[in-house]
Image (tube, rainbow, N blue to C red; front, side, top):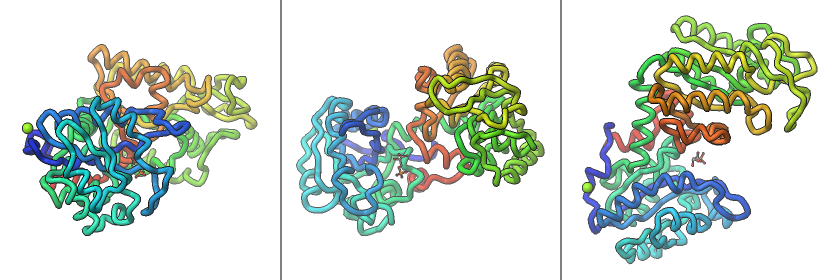
Length: 397
Ligand code: 3PG
Ligand code: MG
């Protein structure tokens, strides 16, 4: 850990600008998953306990630099107050006289949430003048938004250069988990990479080849690899135009001594519908009118055996069309096996990115993993080996 932390900041009596990521899903006008809100509680509570006055900065959705009523952060206030257990005030803008007055008047023991930073164009352009306007709300800056750290925005990057800055506890936990999984892992390390498309995972696969011992490939993207080897995948989701890229990854993996593990058997069906009639066939025997929708049981048994001999598993993406039963079977079974080994103290398991958490949560496995990241895109960019600007800015201070 090369950033400062809350331990290094003097918080007592100070207004602390805390960049959080509470970009949470809504259903019927209410927060439908408060995972990200609960994840920032330790940092905010610690600031309060030290006598600091937390002023929360966050984005919500993609309003593109102008106010959009449906993307007001006010909708998160009940969930925030419930999670934090203290009163949460709201400032209808994140800069300007009213916001400054609200931050200045914040009593000890309460929290101020400021309106969506992305209502201003200067947030995403990382405009120094906008950054200065944000900086006027506080005396120190804490970044607890690992999941927005891939954005070089004013509130995620610029502020670190304008105020004394440190990582919050969630940021710290995310960085520690990721370092344990890839920077300095216990070997063997297995990456489980699934999801629909190879096109979104090319950079990630290219980086992982040099870092992990095995890559288990599942989901729709496995079809592209099978097809690249000349296998007929019928009506399966498949990026035929990426056959060359897939073959190049296979060749590079072989040269680097990283084993790519593709399914040897698959679950096929004629329709992607709940309860659709399905059958298990060899991976090279998909009927011409059928689709591969999940990894098969022989392959799942093989994946479990690999986990039993591994020390570290990094997981991104489902092994099949997990949203629709029974095509969640491989993801569920493999995730449960990884969770069991984790509980037995034999495996370090780190998961994150996109719909991974939803896929692993369905079986209850995610809760038993060593660490589940709150990040989507930031987790992917980190797996790609990219520098995350929000982290780099903290490390530079
Ligand atoms: C996320 O939901 O992954 C983060 O909040 C980042 O959101 P963005 O992709 O709109 O930058
Ligand atoms: Mg202290």
